[in-house]
Length: 199
Image (cartoon, rainbow, N blue to C red; front, top):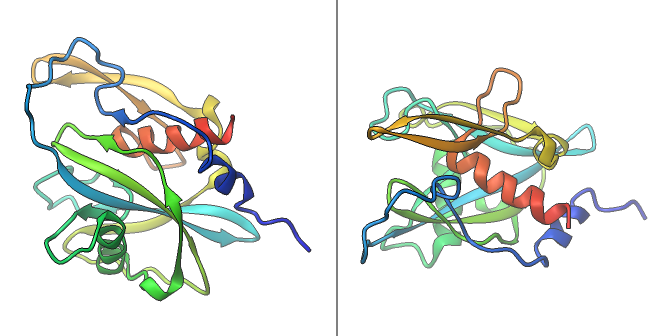
């Protein structure tokens, strides 16, 4: 029987690691006490391309108010009708990229990630079954693409870069792939997965 190409991902789910945040590399930033974080879920979905696992990512529409043009997982905030953050991630993936819930096998979750926009994001890892043909939601998504898991699972591919944000220099992780500049929360979540896979 052939080895499961996602075996390293399944093993990573059993590794211990701490939560992460957009402020990991910026310890001098003082976060307000009593801040309220809104729950959200993103889907880190794996599809097979030529027998190798790839991660599904989106390029957000340049017309969006928040994070226009950035690379992101399908996902979003948990709505009242969502049973939990996993349900939110599945609903948003269906709406944003046309991934049907019946094609998705949820594998588990990574520790939460706090964003600068006050979301507490739960990354939901999932295997996609059958043929997945992306259908981008034009109001939110300009492109759907995949990145080889081997690329984002390699800790040496991650760089630390910076830019000025609200008058101070902010540092963040990046993991560029071809024409795609993957950075911020998406890169930090992927780096967390890479760290667990390396254990």
